[in-house]
Length: 285
Image 1 (cartoon, rainbow, N blue to C red):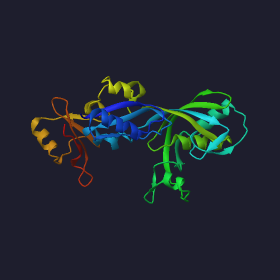
Image 2: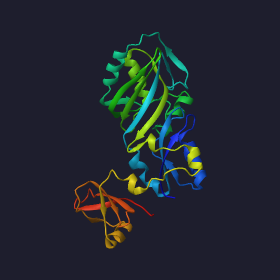
Image 3: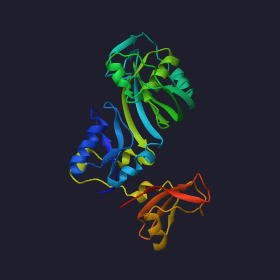
Image 4: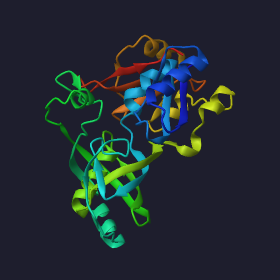
């Protein structure tokens, strides 16, 4: 089996748990995912199977959309409600101030990676530093917030929707929102509603997949965001052999398909010679 399945991840499952379950259902070790979700989080987790693994690094770069629920008045060491409380403060909530602060995060900014994460520093995962109480300088990275919208408020929580670039930690965003509000804030819940072109409406529960009630997304559909060129049998053979070709195309990346709409490969401009295109991914379907 080769392709993608959009899973609606349940709470308390790790992304690895989902990968292992899909691997067991289809009896194949060739399974991976295109973007980790914390156990607390739910929603869209795109699973790649077989040759679909070659798409993981491309799809993990996609824009992601979340609905996050924030608990007000306390902060934990993990930045979510599963951690130990390290700060508490009385507060008064102001809906207009929340909207103002949320909007201030639009655009590009520098975000500090959370201590409890799988990011590596000097070959060691950050959560290993945390669990062993070892000192470490937390890395920072540029992120971008494309859209952000307040959805709901209550006496001690609020919920917002946000569209973000790859590598954005919503837990860290919530911590930073709290700093601007001068109210310690902690992530109470997180639901990923979209990753790139894949939305929660396209997703399936593990039970659905076990029962065979799911859609396997083809390479043709998965790569529809890239320009596609149909080739003849002569070029198909060259492409399958990973040959460098003449660049007769306007785009940086293109997908070659045959007359049956089967995806053969993704090619990109050859940086050493822009008059050529070279294979980025060749599929053995």
